[in-house]
Image 1 (cartoon, one colour):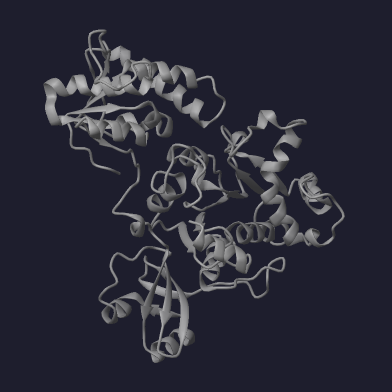
Image 2 (cartoon, rainbow, N blue to C red):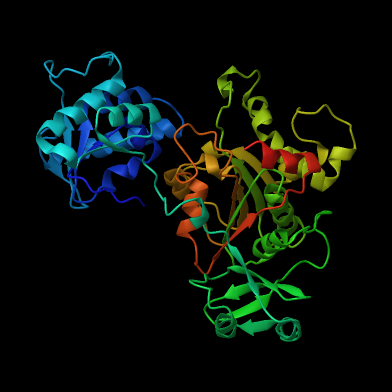
Length: 452
């Protein structure tokens, strides 16, 4: 989490829409909420989407604060800070060149007015890059809101690392199927802060091996991979082997899979989930859900009933299921017209459920294998809401690519996938794998590298 060193923090509406709990992230500061922000929240509160839900939560929180005193005078917060609603006066003038009709400029006006008495101890927090530019031009301290940000892109936990050993050590590892972590650290002084269930690529001059760390007994052990391919799908590279190990281990209850398009994260997750539901009977149902983030037209503008409206959004899931079930080779249906016969059977028998995330809220989901696709389009708050739906005996898998974020208020650091990766690092029931190599096609792999 970012650290903010300021006596007064002026907050923009978009910060609340991203993180309804943002009000509690500014310890020992006076959090200034311009009145125009509350008015903007009112315009969002009726929307039946994550943005509307966030607006309603913030409004309810502010309403409860009224019990502590008058908001315009400032009221104490549980984190040691204070919250104050600020009303700009008619005589408060904006600098020349700024349109007084723009709501963003009223937020800027509020920060400028407070700066007159507080000087550089005022900080404007906004997700709006244009507003940050204007604040900087006017000499105002400003910052983006990046929940979960650390030192940079390279600081995000990858879930795996490479270490060098002798060929003799690797031979012994294959014989005993384990190796003591303290022995590894003696030979590799650069290994710092290893995490539970972290994966290792043991590299020798001529030999290599893959291992997983069990930090509770300080040992690296061999991976537990299926003897045969699952629905015709097997691991093609070492990261995919790591993923199969995590997905097939019942002791790991939460798995996060990150990677660029074409690395196989969703396909592998569905294959492992389908196998454990239909063949091993470890779970009652495979539940696949994904957020509906419009890139053009919204659901309301698509023709048909609800099921028909959802088909285009769920088509990527159907594509993977058809590949696993062999239905993509039959050519007996028109593409994009919903699921094929094999999928319909799984849906009808209750072994499979494919739905938007909207319908997961408020539920308790026991003994199911859940896959949440496109997690990079969730806010940290939404990710937390989803994961708390998990019931006894359920395993949940989050997949996503933090380079392909469609949500207007999320970025590389502030999305739900990055949030989960960092927060569950080192937990005994959690594992993370970052898939690197594209396996969809040569063209898809080249495109993911060139078209960043």
